[in-house]
Image (cartoon, rainbow, N blue to C red; front, side, top):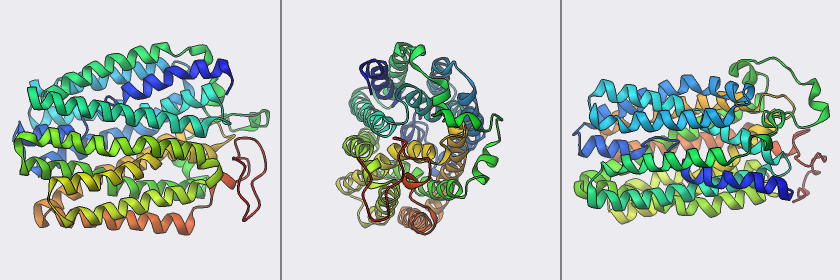
Length: 422
C-alpha cells in the first residue's frame, strides 16, 4: 500500500476502534440489564434477543446490495450508527417487552449495515493486494475498541450502575461518526469495493441478483455459509449465558464481571486478528478457520466444568481465539469466492443472513434448554454444534486461497504441497 493509500486508510483505525461499542448495540449488556434491573426471566430475555436478531436477518442481504450499489457509503455508516444509538438509549424509558423488542429490532436492522460497509470501504481504499493484512488490522482495532469500552463499562457500572453502559455507547457513537467523516470519499474506488478488481472483470454480471442466487451459483460459498451459520449458532448464546450465570451468582457485580469476560476475550483477539491478517495468504484460509471452530467446540465443553467466576472468565479467553480468527477471515474468504463478480457485498449480506438465523436460533434454543435442563446442557449442546460445523468445513470446503482468480497478487495458485508466497 502506497503512502497516499496508507494515509487514506488511517481513519479506518479510528472507525473500527470507536464503532466497536456501537455496531452490536448493547450486546450482552442488554441481557444483564434486563435480568438485574428490569427483573426479566431468562426465557423473556431469549425471546427479545431472538426476535431482534430475526428482524436483523431481514436486513442483511438488502444491506449488502445497498453497499454494492451506493457511493454514499460514509453516509450509510453514519445513519446506521445514529439509529442504533437512539434505539439503545430509549430502552430505559420504555422498558416493556414489546417496546424493547421493537427497539432491538431496529438496532439489528441498522447493525446489518456495518460488516459489508466497512469491508467494502476497506477494499475500495487498499485494493485486493493489501486486503488480507488490512482486514486483520481492522479487526485488531475493533477488538481493542471493544476491550477499552468494556473496561470503561465495568468501571462506570461499578460506580454508577448498569445504566452507565448506555451513556458510554452514546459517546462512542459520536466518536465513530467523526472517524467516518475523516475518511476521504475520493479515496474509495467503488468498483473495487464491490469486487471488480481487474480489467478482465468487465465481463462480470452487471445485474443485482438476490443473495440466494449468489449463494446457489457457488457451492463453496454455500458450504462456507453453512459452516459460519453453525459457528454463529454455537457462539451467539455463549457469552450471554456466561453473563447470566455471573449475574445470578453476584447480582451487584454482574455488569462488571461481564466486562471482565469481554476484556479478556478482546485482548486475545487483537494479536490473533493481526496474525491471521499477516499469515492468511501464506497458511491458507481453511486450516485457520478450522482452528476457530475447534476452539469454539472446546469452549462449550469447558464451561460446565465449574461455576467459579475465575474459571468462566478464563474459558472466555478462548473466545478471543475463535472470534479473532472469524472476524479477520470472513470478508477475506467471501472476497476469494466472489472475485470478479461485482457481488462481494451482497454475498456478505447473504451469508450474514444465514449467520443471523444461526444466532437467532442460538439464543432462543439455549434459553429454552437453560429453562428446562440447566446451563450445562445448553453449553454442551452449543459445543457439539460447533463440532458439526468443523466436520462440514473439513469435508466439503476447498482452500479458497487456491481457487482460480482468488490470489490477490494475480499469480497462479501454489502447487500442491508448496507454500504460497507471503
